Length: 160
Image 1 (cartoon, rainbow, N blue to C red):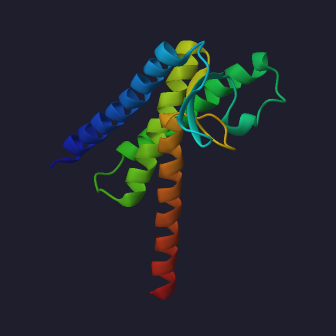
Image 2: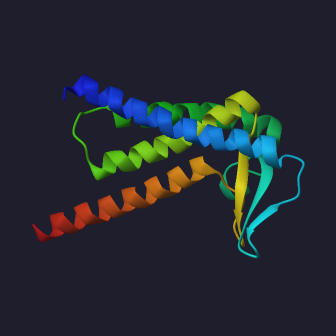
């Protein structure tokens, strides 16, 4: 497979993942907005609609929203662009590339929400954890996989 074909395949996978994220957000907005939480596993997991104008764990709540929104749009766009370039560069498959693909899909999914809606749709809630979405799952899984690959690489280098 040519390098160009591999890039197109990666772009297709990225588009598919972002599409899945947005399909779930669309369904959440249509079915959950204005409704009480829907319990899936009593006391553990429920579905609830939240419009998030902040980042994970509301880390930027101290910044006024009129300042926070443009900062998130600019930094999110730059991050998504950079990650996309890294994922599409080179032609060799690696677990690290898969990890970055997942992180990129999550970043792009949430970034598009910010651009198109002005907020990110969150709808999954696990007891004692903030409400999240599919893009957040991509970022978390990608980050964990990236950490594992980096630790494995370091371990291989130290034994070489």
